Length: 423
Image 1 (cartoon, helix red, strand yellow):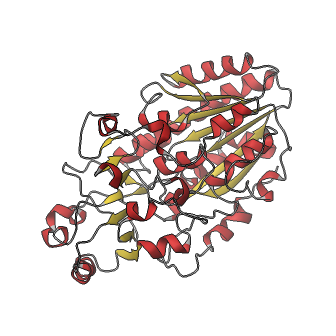
Image 2: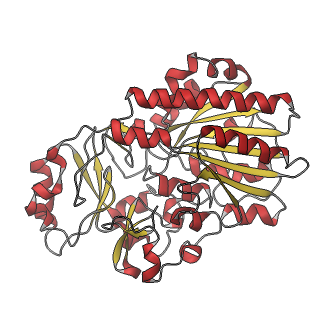
């Protein structure tokens, strides 16, 4: 099968959004068939089901593959940017797999973050349509900034699921259908194989309607559990989604180029090789194995200069703390303070942050085409701040522990792999 990186990468890097300038290195989400949001409809087509949400992946991805499969397995390696995978392509097992598999780049979404990307992967809708626009999100209807993974107030610690006390209902929060329900209605068995620690988290509860959640404890448990699940599915159409988070966790803590990250993915690759060998021993040509990522990460060295608590003049211009992502903050301005806030940002961090009116970002399609969900404008606030280089903003009322981040539009954050193998 073809290696599409050299063909597609220049096209994705050259993409632009009309009327929007996010900086010279920005990679824009390619929602028209070259991004994560286009995978769900492709999964539906491979399983012989009606499409859901956005258009499927472009023909260049689907052409080398068969039209239909009995089993589709999608492995999401959290934080595995295309740049992190590339050094492994000349090593076993990847170099052995490449001649018989398809490798291509995809773009993440905006923001390039887990809560947003996984919501799109389980709904087939753009961020502007489903309304989950970042890790932390202003929810006017509950009068708070929420952590959209833990479903707790963003300022709280140890309160997973605490939004329920404010009347938050994970089942009804999203204004769009879920992939699990859609496939189940067509007779497809749907499984979500998740780490035990998050198997029934707030985000999982919100997204996995119609899917059987299967918890695992480590990589050995993951592959044996998944193999046993597939063996019992003989004769049944199956969609198995696998989520693995260790690359992302280590990249946040130590930086994405740290040797711990590479060693961890090397371990993942070896255990994946064992799993693939098991599948190949009983291969029937009816299984499609896909690996991709929700986003990559960029190295962000600790720098007190990016901590907002050190700039009370700027904080005084804001109604409340920013929300969104450290690499894509949303600002809510006090009336009449726009000019002052702009001057402070430009003087304090010259050329490090672009200020984009939220309405302009939305209308240009940064968060996706189509009609936005009614609450999206209020969740974005007044400004979308776009960091340049490795800049970020830190506003949490605690010490900053992160040396790797995502959410922004850099190539490291936005470009992810799409790898597919028929078995």
